Image (cartoon, rainbow, N blue to C red; front, side, top):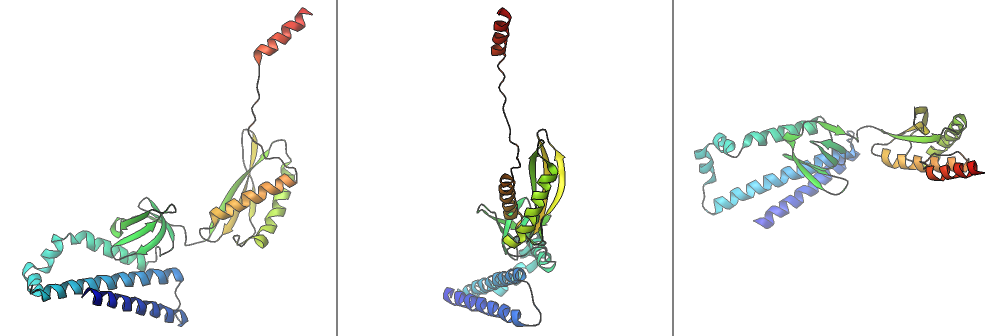
Length: 264
């Protein structure tokens, strides 16, 4: 019986994968992320149906009249007894998540204080894997607010410090020259990064801000590239990036020098 159930699930998965392969060649196209979501959902539904049917068949084989048992207990009473209210809430919420395309498998989201990549959207739960490897399983009914970082292009933001002694106009010219080269050198940048200008005046530096439009989830690596390239180019042109300096003041030594000078 168990072997038959596993065989049915395996055949069902193959049929589901073949279905989406044909869909790719058809007139109605769906995105890869949508395809992954629907295929995994159908696989989960198939497993639930096969397992339920297998349990019913085993009970019938053992001589337990399942139909009479369900009829006697009452479907409604049995459902309430198993806490079906939360179950129904999870299923309905999961349906709207998929129907409204709030997020899909592979998206990077923040939901219920959990943040990470969506591994699976099931009938009842959603699995989110954090970038450090933890897998969070959240009931769909508990997902209230969602932040999806993968729906649209991102923006990499880099703030760069220039010394007050430096020439701001010269620094901006060097940066603008570099920004024009970056899209040809790196595929991360969709358009030429933009220098917004002076963002703020710090205690010991002038802050310039650079932004760049990038593909979804590429804003972190793109920001690292920007920092590296900006640092190297400014060093080549002799433009100083300020760093903290510590000035030591020895009051006792100064007093001794003053005393010695007075004796003379």
